Image (cartoon, rainbow, N blue to C red; front, side):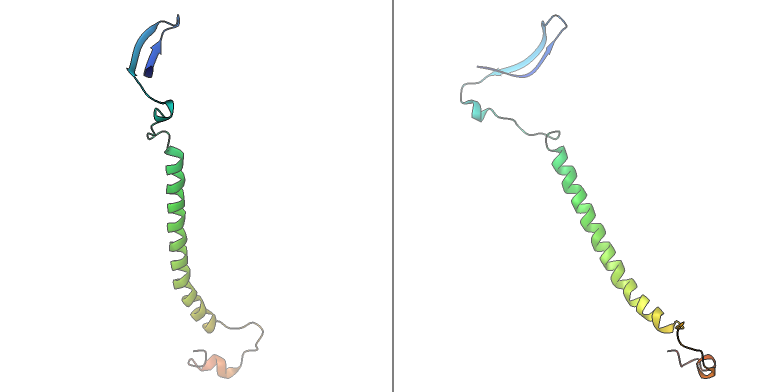
Length: 96
């Protein structure tokens, strides 16, 4: 049986170029051999998942760092609901 790897025909269906080999065996063993183009979609999805995982780790790390700073910032802020007293305004250590 003749298996074609590549064949080029002109407009009159005449063979210009052919690359083939003779094969003796079952068709199931003569299957598709994967190359870069056939696995491109899967590789792109893996790359995207890896990138998203890395970004999520960066965000979590950044939130962990900023979370501590936000708690410290909230302690030093003046609350709107409380009236200001003279002691609070004049004593610098009172807010800490």
